[in-house]
Length: 281
Image 1 (cartoon, rainbow, N blue to C red):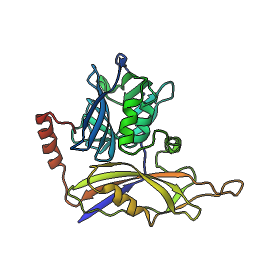
Image 2: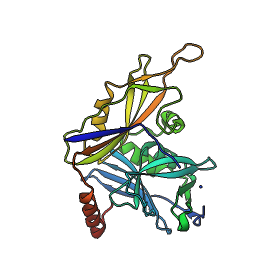
Image 3: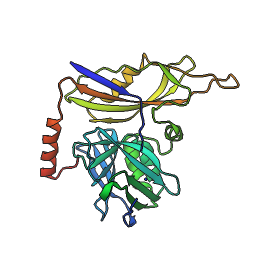
């Protein structure tokens, strides 16, 4: 049997800093045969920041992070661009647990293209349980990021980003509740587990529309499309506005797909094999 866990989330969790690292420009790798386009920068502090489009699936990755202690699927990182306040973001933990993938790669990549300062805090990542802070200076040129976004058919500017950023931890705006939550089913897939993060706008009748797959992993597992199919019966209760005019709001939810009886032993074996071959996650 297969089970699907729908988690209606973003997530949550203050610091010695590493010296500021300047990214002079992005390194670019393209492999048209494998439908892979990646821009990345490997820093002296061991961190690698990358955005890649793999066969139409956009991912934003951080590699070289301190591995989280708990066996979890996600971790919280605190991210601040420019002089903005730190934002708590959920990142997915890859098979190689020193690698994290953004739940919202397109908005993250669009912020990268602006250049300037980027700070990343890793809660509990430093000695003694203190927070670890990376302080980066991004290149002013946006051409490389623009190219990978365009390859994955993502807009360079999207007004939805601000709405996503304002969502609370459970992915529902204030006053909005689920009358009937999404009900995704495990797809026909060669993978035993996966996830998809989806955002939608509300309609006046409570149905969801204009849904977007923010992220999914593995990219060829069919989990994003399964999440979209599971949205069809979903309905929300949205309180009326003070002036009585309906205004759509954005909601987000995460679907974790797990095959019954699955253990992560296979993941650990695959991760060791990848490290042995020097492959990226």
